[in-house]
Amino acid sequence: MQDLSHFPKACLFDVDRTLSDSKGEIRPVTRAALKKLAAAGYEIAVCTGRSYAELKQAILPLFPDDSIHITSGGAQVVRMSGEVVWEKVLPSELVHTIAEKVHALGADFGFSQRTLYAGTPNVLEYKRTQRWPVETIDVYELEDWTTPLLTIGSLNESVHAYMESLEDVEVKSMTNSLGMPYYDVTPIGITKREGAQAWAKAVGVDLAETAAFGDSENDLEVLEYVGTGVAMGNAIPELKAIADFTIEDTDDDGIAQFVDHLLAQNT
Image (spheres, rainbow, N blue to C red):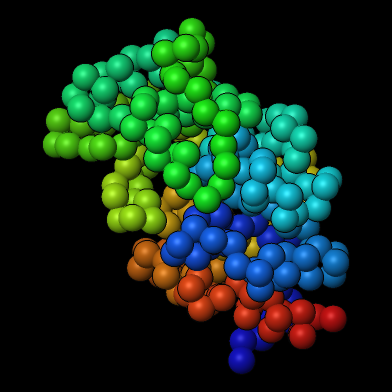
């Protein structure tokens, strides 16, 4: 068994295929694991590409009421109430330029603004079929498109070429739970690492004494930067290569098993 006697007492969790399983469900044992960590005095939060709008009803209530979270791929740090502690945003004009270009090339796009998720019809239909409820709005009902993160899906070669040409934003190539590729776009220089830095300052913890759990491309920077990186068994090989620990697959209750082992050594 792994020696976890010196494991950090602050933990950041990716959501998709880390807290959630491959069906998009947060299993009861995972929910219980979060409660056990909080009860044992661990500082816990999400560190996710998801927006506050997507998290506020189904995910954030699993955490303590006074917790602070990293959302939108590291571009926003927010309290449970929705109060923004820190953020970096893409200006409306830039979002219009990128979004309208990719839409003309055949792609779909979406983004959040506080408690609303805006997007093209295909994106909103997809969001409405997900297990986690989110309040949506047709993007063309909004005049201001300022947002921490822009997501682009329904990709083709022309869209790929355009996205690769962008230099004034941070672009992450991602894959959803259905195996479909998409892009996350944040302000230049912003990844989960920068969000974690702002979170640590707000919460009053040292990232050298923080663990981060993840599975995908947008977890690389934060797992490499924090004191302890934990890769899921279903994580991409690049993430496992830099992680301090690799635990069981999300479908095998990896977090719940790890937490039980952790608390057995530290309580």
